[in-house]
Image 1: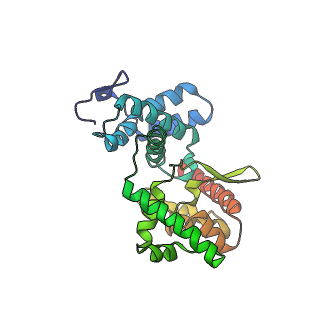
Image 2: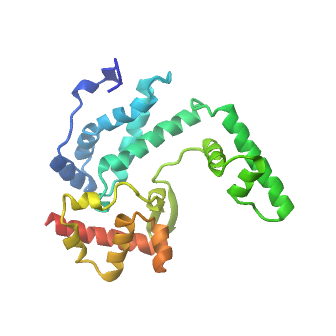
Image 3: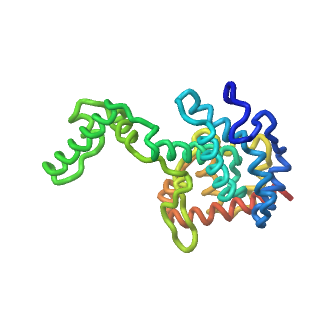
Length: 259
């Protein structure tokens, strides 16, 4: 909770409702069927996620009411795009979207100021890369650029990244045959792997229902934390095929586990 802030945008934050796991599951099923009342209830039951993200921006002189409203937009987008069959907690899915929505707003409004030193480093790296490209007739690597200006590769990457506009994890990057791939699909999860599921669910039994290709994809994606692109390269199929097979496998496992 934000210190000294009880009411935001007319909402009494001390009385925000919370949802039990079974309520979340039931409401999300209704949402997927087009129930707008269930959607509103689900959103209200997750407003505390917006507050948890706002803590990171507290003390920066921003209007918390404005940021709360922007965060709620991210929360609603997360509700509309959330796919329970992926086996990811809604909070894990929603927090990055809420944070991204707020950062995008602050960046667009000019509230996030990149330090001058970082800007200088970034511009120097860009200029050096252009000079090296002309001299060598090929684009240099980041390591080569870093060596040329006397910095580490990490320092150059950090400076260049500071100039970039934040993107949503659900920004589409590719579409094939109706299967849209998002930025999230290209991010490996090194922390929340399938082992966390095993503590609560009989995943190993569910995985035995999969065919050989699906079993391999689920193992690589969730046990080893590989991205869809890495899996595609390893087993020799397209990323769109990996996405399609992964969704089918997770659906099969979910049906088994919920039976």
